[in-house]
Image 1 (tube, one colour):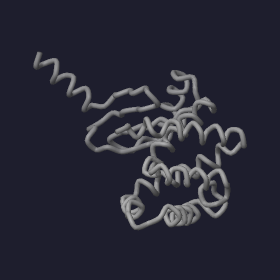
Image 2 (spheres, rainbow, N blue to C red; image 1 turned 90 degrees about the vertical axis):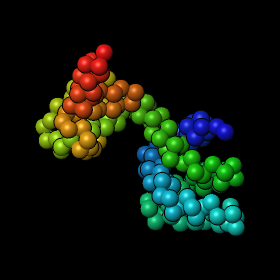
Image 3 (spheres, rainbow, N blue to C red; image 1 turned 90 degrees about the horizontal axis):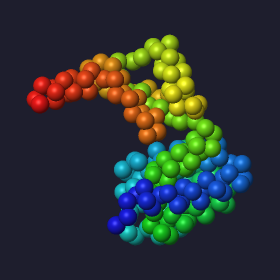
Image 4 (cartoon, rainbow, N blue to C red; image 1 turned 120 degrees about the vertical axis):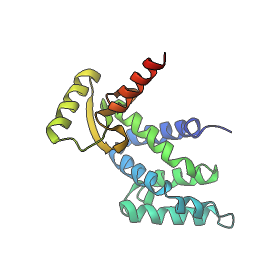
Length: 187
């Protein structure tokens, strides 16, 4: 069976191409974010997997959820025939469960064209605004792209931070340093 990312890539590319042609990247991005959040909810996925539901019932259910989450005019809430057709296609091909991965690939394509990257800064304690700006400026200089920082807290880090920006991972956590020290002592 194919990996979800492998399945998601062509759908994301097709959605990206249509959105770019119609200057609707921002609208589709917002709709994909809502779709991703909804599909990651186990209750929605469980409901959609019910065998007695027809694809038309699933479509009506999803369009209603998207309208509630983003608004009636959203791409996946009936605000666009392309969006409705996209959801229909996913339902027909039994790929609606791959929406989170499609959204992720779409955002990567959008970030490439906008020359930006989302960076997740995971730290043991909340970082000050000044520190976040400093990290953002350093990443911008290193990556040569606009950087959107997202802050997360992980108490298991002990101290320091781990920064993930696309394929770049900078691990400056105390936990990583201690693991490195333990590894060096064992050898």
